Image 1 (cartoon, rainbow, N blue to C red):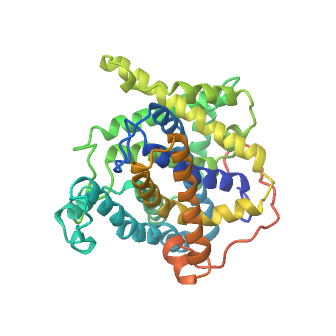
Image 2 (cartoon, rainbow, N blue to C red):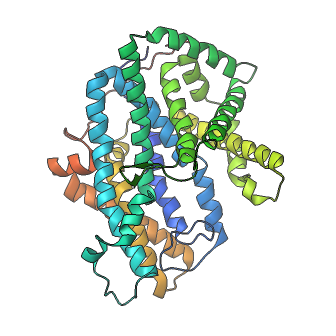
Image 3 (spheres, one colour):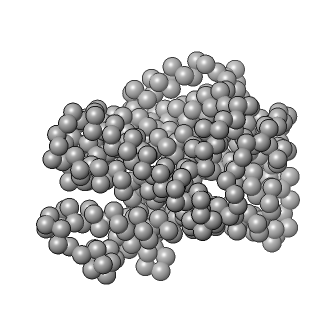
Length: 410
């Protein structure tokens, strides 16, 4: 059993990193040919496709692994009832706020730019009762907030599972013993991490395949007429969340994932450079599935290398800079996207070198969101609760405690 009082500086650093790097992805999408942000800016450069795709290899997956890890950490610390309340406030309230404010605002800007006259005559208040906005909610077009929707659903699965365990009075030890046996199989061989990558790839491929057997797997399922998320996307990313749960539960898996193996760094760099995807080729179905499986394996290489790097360099090194960034991650994530969109529009008529425009878009978006956090959110208890889901004072750095390193079931 791990220490419930420890602060995992390395994993928290990884979470902070991926949340901030998401701004680089969305800034790149302003100029990306295949995954454009669809601002009024029509300049397109393939280098941004490659860069955005490279970051996508590990950014979202790493975040969900961290989310799964900390969900069990908090569940053990607080118990089920308090865990439900804390996750609702930390994720649910900021998610609802973002969906009803910045998400609506950005959809209005997109509608203004692409479907309405560009003379500014479209009224925002009229848009709130428009058919277009109703369609946005019905189809679950959540822009970057899908991240929080997926996370909230993943927490809901954990809460439901725990409630069922309690209702049936099942013992967790039996489950942990099964997990330990599966982990031993998944880490068998002279290079356990490679075996683990193959097993995780197979698990994810199976989950995705099963999701496609459901009706309308690529369309968001609806609750009370509101689109949530597609079964395919949920299955794709829930595997990462599940891996995070197991990472906390099993020390053998923890040691395999975080053991420093420098040879994985060049392997991850090659994986990022190649970015092998089925859509790059015209292939028969069997080969297309094989290439997709290879793509999943390359993703796992980059994900595990990211976790190893942060564990190696940040395990026992608390940082005030990191703490401030970590405290602001939710604010930055919620607000940066609309600033990226507005700045993308701004540069339509300026025509500066594209890399300078991109750098300004990313820097200015982060700076604007950080300013909102420092001057509006952090000083106000109400704003911290609504936007960050925090009910207490901002965190301070505590002396790190060692993480237990036993092998076997935890």
